[in-house]
Image 1 (cartoon, helix red, strand yellow):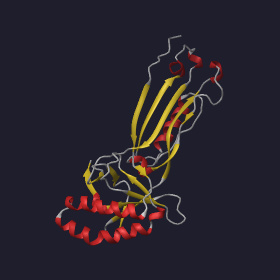
Image 2: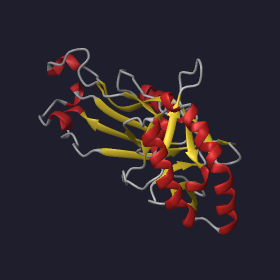
Image 3: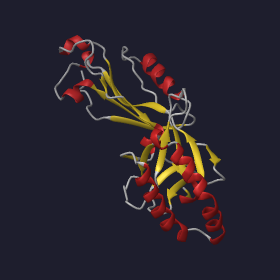
Image 4: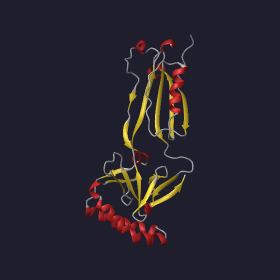
Length: 255
């Protein structure tokens, strides 16, 4: 019998469209029909994701010789949304350059265009290692061996843009932040935007103050002191958070 080839075979593909964050969990006999069924399930996903599948003989994973008839296939599938796509619009913090949002997340203007309201979503994300073993007991494995489930729940916007949560502000701290933010941002705006900003930012500030006790506070990945804040809160009865952005503090960049 020829010696088993221990080199990993990798299949990389983009599925359009595909599912937001879905975990593949299967444990089946290693034959072409079952493998085809697994890959067919991947192709049915609904939102764009980056998917990597590694198919490896069990002997390569465990680094010991195993008779060919006792080998199984090990499939590792990691489902994560692509952070970027062709012609995508990314919104950066005008003061720090941190990416805070993209047009993948629809927004609604409120408070005379001063704030953007964006709906976030809790999603399941992670990697699952799956053994579809021909004969697991032949190598001393138990029934669940080979399944490595590290899935976690995350909020899509926070995870995608690596937003960093900050301690909550009291009223005095928030007003102090707003004064500094307005001072730093105003010179960065074009003249016509400066006028609209000065006219309407007070109303947006009052709106945020009215929700202050319910807000979570986030900053961009760099955690720069002068960066914009991103806010999140839960509307009455909602299980997913709503995010609020300073619209004039965002710079649109085409990928």
